[in-house]
Image (cartoon, rainbow, N blue to C red; front, top):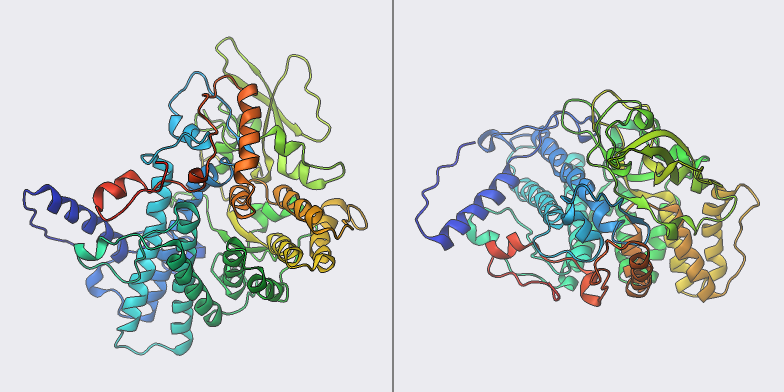
Length: 531
């Protein structure tokens, strides 16, 4: 598609044209997976003039609306996991080029942070694509079956609701775009309140849940939103808002949709099991190869080293590692006999040369680990470690989980406990613990609401570690300021490189700033307090 634009030499007008072109190009041209997002065919450009002329065109457009999920996943762990007490970073004194991400972790980030900007932009890319689909679908002149129309509408509404949920939790009230952007004036919208955004999310997800089919656990449905994933996310919305009575029936309905815990916790995340996995309610699909749709999480989560051979089975000078490092705080929460500890956290042993370059020698279990003399030990997120890896650097098949069945069970336990049904809550909590400790072991029996509240929160921390749940859980349960202030105080005593002003966790820091670039482009936007 070619666009001819006459630009007047007026800075305000040029800003309008710039944002218009950006939004227009993102909403019109979808990633063209030829059959299905799940098959992960290469993304390309489609011509607006001869597109949206058939059911297949709309199905391809829906496939393209899933693509920003990958862009969010590639940035989210800094904002969702490393912002919490679960993970920190391996300080690299020789390379101080990581200030952007380190500042994000240490509560020193500002509105020009590229990670928050990338996430904000990716979410709006997804919203733009779904808006185009919904507007064009309402105007079709060709025959489309009711089944196809319901599926396309349901997926588009579910994805739009998901992207807005991602935005409102991280940035608060944001501009509500509900239609295709066709001219510059459509692009400049004031921020809606958080309540207005939540109302739209609930409306979208509720409608989508009524249109989409229940999960079938077949390969054709892998990675797609279903009635199960939408119902789960709608319940998560209500949990975020502490509307427990609305969340409970939704979560209970999910327990009747055929989902189940896999017997072995570590098998859940193995890429070999990612199709038809009954525990995965929804995940972001990645695929290794040359199509640009691979993941590289394990390269990020293992240490910086000149040679990854003894870790990954492939030789690579890994300069991007050292992130999502398990904290001592997280490690100490695991109880003896909890099989999730070994599945979640591992140790990489190695040596340092005279230039402090780390050379790994082997990967060992963290269970009962004692560091040998003369050995450097680095803990890492083993949950996403499944070697050997293909001889394509930073190129893996690892998907990213968004919702798992254990998440549903623990949310249901929490909601029941908060509504005075502690005895019933134990049923769902102990299903998760039975898998972790073995039949008859590790069972919780207390029905004291306050005690059980703490137990469930700790259980979510262990079960869902490194899955980007901890930071929002702390916010949702009102613990973020207290927990992260105490954690930051301890961390600053341990690591002298942390600045005195780091970990100043205030109410303002429970939201991220609206990206500076967006503020500069849209004069109607206001910044979040504290930035």
